[in-house]
Amino acid sequence: MKPLLLDRIIPTLMVFACGACDGARSVIAEEEARAVVEGPSASPGAQVNVQHECAGMEQILATRSTWHGSSKSGESHVGRWRGSLGGSAASGFPASDVLLILNSNDTGTFEFLSEAPPPRPDDPSQGYLCDGSVSGGICGTPSGFVGGFEYELQGVVARDRVLSFVLLDADPWALWCELQTPVQRADAAQPCGFSWDIVPLSMERWAATGCEQVDAAGNGEPIDCSLMYALERCKCAFDGCFASFYSGIEVGLSLSNDAQELSGSLWFKSNVDAALLRLRRQPP
Amino acid sequence: MKARVFGLRRDGPRLGQRGRVSYAAGSALISFALGCGGDGLVVGEEMARVGDVGSGESESTAATAAGSNAAVALVAECPPSPAERQALLGCWPTRHLGRWRGFFMGNPSYELANGSVRDFPLGDLVLTLELGGSGSLTFGAAAPPAPPTAAGDAPLCAGTLPAAGCLGPLQIIVGFVYSLEQIEMLDADVEPNSRITGELPLPIGERLYFGIPLGQPWQTDAPRKCGAEGCFVVGQSLPISLTMSEDGQALRGAYVPLAQNQRPGRVEFLRESGP
Image 1 (spheres, rainbow over the protein chains, first blue to last red):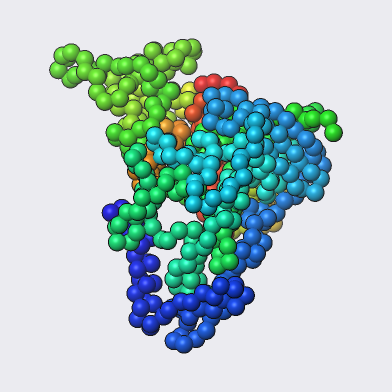
Image 2 (image 1 turned 60 degrees about the vertical axis):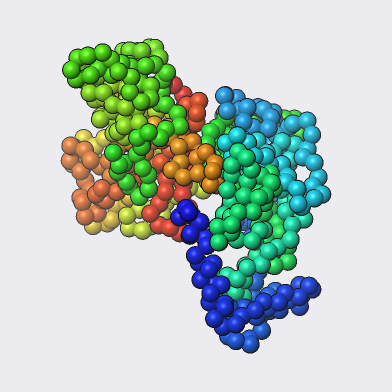
């Protein structure tokens, strides 16, 4: 068994054991506003209001817009920019043509101009935009990006000639994540004694013959690789699931002297590789 | 060999585990001469034969530099130090060499020895890594300050006295060509662990580490107006960690402050020339 598994499982087993000692049980009401649990962090018999003690989706998502820093850009970068990727790594992206739109209110979008946007998800039990390849899972493309999707710029900063922003790699999975159902587990680290995951606590395992989720006892449950990798893009609160916004791909572009070109490099998720990126200012 | 650390965790190349061979290794094979003078033996991975690596001036110079040296290393054993690399056939030159132009992203700042925080200067960065193993970094396009020529001509702290607390050495000087210290160049590798059990570990491009000695502009043989009491921060060095793209045209990384509550200063470079 790998240390990684032990790291995740042992604290959970301890929490379960603790919960067993004081006879804790958990009951989640169907109506979230009245959801009440009696958790391991509470004294015996105490009632804990889940909605009050644990952050819901609205509260968590309120931090999304500033998670990667507050946006503040200048006028010099505002506009519509179109260009292309170059170099050998360009093939790892959804398309070589890209479109960047930066508005004067510090919002904007970034899109790989492929032929069609991703299909609208309708089945939470089926994987979405992911695939199990010969060496592991690939979601979107090897770079981690999805073509035809308008990424909302986060943490936009213009400093001198440099424009930088963050693209949230899980954003294309947002609609699919919203279809998922939160899975509750005891979590002594949380004020209400529980946390909510997208799947029961387990270790993921990939193999060329298929994927598995391995529980604390070491029992493997087969899972579709596409589903397993797609689920990684989601986070949950007690009242629903959403696309994770905690990780992103940072982009930096330098403005030319004539303010007509932005240049830099676009990196894969995890900084595995990069392609050169040049964008030309488009007429308004 | 374990890489030295200035605030960052990193491991040197590991035997028998390598994602991609370095530029120096290229695709050439080297015959590994046995000590007894018998037939050549190809050991492990492909090794570069000096003179076979690519083409151009840099390779021939490297051949001269290493020509009298009989030491040969497996590519995976190449040390991080440029000086040590030059002494080993197949370890030099690396693709790190050349001239790079870059910039910081976001609102980058750096931490000083006294705990205060300063913004990195505006403007381009120019990083140069020489065939001789040295390197330099310049912030911004401004002309560097003139070196002092007399006791009363210390431009970086002009008009100040040590007792007044000259802040010059506490900050980066725009236009000054910093000679990099503790340069380390690592070959491409793979992550020590796969992200998900069973997957192949992610590849890691060639890496580059160095320190920017903040006090260097004041380390001159000329007389100094600012004394140590008021000006010098001995030994403070800003650590930069970079990773190269597979095509060798881009570097990306960060200055990682020691203070955990400070965000790393993200930086990236595009190649202008070389190696």
